Image (cartoon, rainbow, N blue to C red; front, side, top):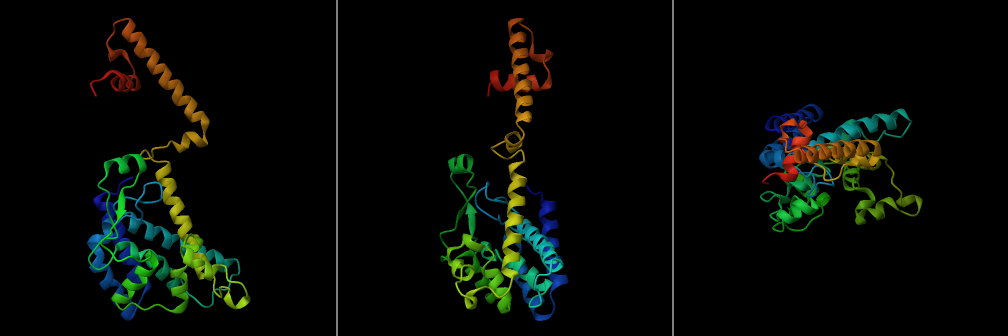
Amino acid sequence: MKFTAEQLQENWDKLINIVETTFEGERKENLLQMYEYFKERAMFAPASGVVYYHNAIPGGYVDHILNITECCTKIYEMWKEMGAHTDEYTLENVIFCALHHDLGKLGDMTEDYYVPNESEWHRINQGKMYEYNDKLHYMTVTDRAVWLLNEFGIKMNQIEYLALRLTDGMYEEANKGYLMGFGEGKNLKTNLPLILHQGDMMATRLEKERYMFSKDSSINYSEILNPELKEERQKEEKKSVDNIKKAISEEKTPDILSEKSKDLFDELFGDK
């Protein structure tokens, strides 16, 4: 999957609209200042470096942010409907954490977090489209997100910090102390981190499935899940091959073949 220039701009406009309609006052002004600073880099940033993770494409970052924000908003409403305690945070808090949980993937003030992988072999055979930029000081994505927000004077409250800090759940080793606390005093006293993690997992999975079932995927997952599709394709290919053999044996031109047969003929016997 690839985003067109129009889609990149449309996604960016959606992101800015969320900021403008969700926040107020100094916080809104500082957020808009930060997004303006990172605009050109953020619009083209990927959400990961490997195609089979999620959104390892130009524009993948903003798309992921929009997806997790939508997912978290709906999950938040569902948790409230089911009777979860949500008195200590609001929808604004949910959106703030969703928007900025991966902010560190933009890099620092001058360097991108991801840079294009120059190895064609790794791009083709392992799907590693981007590499980490070794010019950056090492930080986790979350630590860099907090640092960047601080650079633009964007404050967060304690609940927001915990949710942003724990969005990656148990995938981040440092989060275990928060999520596996023994004793009541060490247990989470808010469920917002759980909503953020659930939303991130959902958005990431949806983006991965979009790749899995696209023509860009190196594996045909549709055929894995539905073997009948594979059988139909194999029958069609066998029929095409039989037509090609017949045409060759009768010294007939491939013009008599079907369009699919022509494509297969070119693939098998063409000059490529």
